[in-house]
Image 1 (tube, one colour):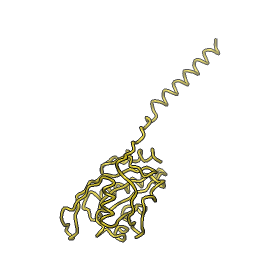
Image 2: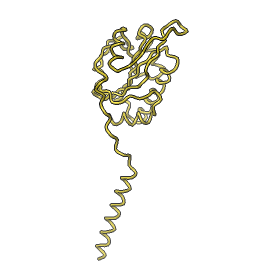
Image 3: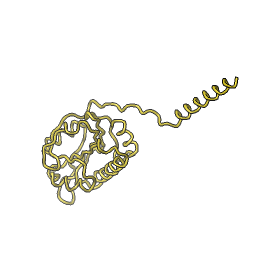
Image 4: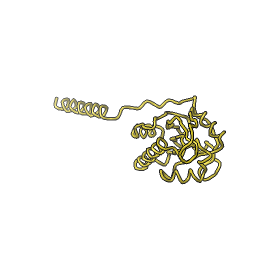
Length: 196
């Protein structure tokens, strides 16, 4: 009888532990859907002046942002947030498999040299891409990015209005999610981890 009571207590303790574990652990995340209408291969020029093909991004999880370096507000604010996310990933030990990419709308002013100087302010590992106007138009079209000149800025250069999403790409370079520029960094980091 005593043995039976001890077994019943042991079973109850195990059940209590299982229930406690199930209720305190994070819920399983649904896999991020694959967006089949966006993305694709492209060739541009990186901030070292070298030809860059999108195949170089395969095998990494990518955060991609389109903008221009003379942007007065949204672009530098978004890049600063991306730099903070990179720092968070480094602290968590997840940065090695994540690549951030900035593609410019303004190839006339955003030369490789200028991109290199600009991106250094945010993080040394961010890839900056420029190219001909045709290349920029093509890659923007592939990702459903809208941009248009809206006049001159104070320096006499083109000012652009543009869509401002950050694109999450998986290791096969497929678009998995779009974030508004003010997206929660923890949400982004959690999503990234599901793809690593």
